Length: 255
Image 1 (cartoon, one colour):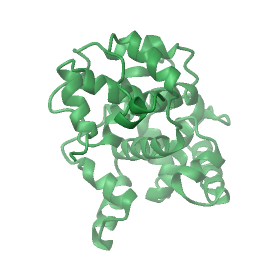
Image 2 (image 1 turned 180 degrees about the vertical axis):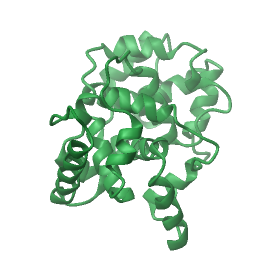
Image 3 (image 1 turned 180 degrees about the horizontal axis):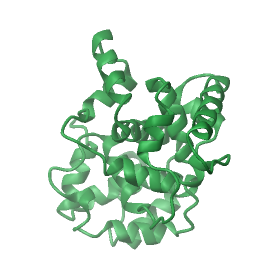
């Protein structure tokens, strides 16, 4: 039997086919809810679902996200767009200068702070000990303080939205292909290739940001629980989808 994938879903949602929206409800609404809660977005999930029906969204543009984790990264951008941020005392040049001594993985520990991840949650996502994350963040704070006139604790978290927006605008043709991040997470990479990727991360905030977003997507996909049948039915009705047919055995035995 053929396996229905995220790419199949994107194709079907683009064509406004019921199969695509049904798959989105069961598989990605739990992730959507998780993202809204993490970023403290007080928006009803029903409103977000209706927003996703817009065929003009970049999320549905051909050829679409390459993998499931890429899809979740793009989904977050659609449901939680960057707000207008003014008077940001931080910029990527300051971070580049201040964080020059940090390694590629330490830069990710620090960047997760801009994404509202505390030390414990960052450690879980990165699969390291919390004190490893905390040590890198403490050093990062000291480095920022020595490179700024008006430093205060918590600047990265406070200005995370602006820094993320700036990083996504710093993409160049030299940035890493999306498969590089997946290979790093999944451990399907040679030592030399790993070193090349880490060298690039040392000088590219776009790729640091994107790597952390891919890690976030990977974590969220494993952290969520599926929607219950009542919720699924409610969202199917909201999307004007036909009632979901029960499996044959369930129908035969009246379940």
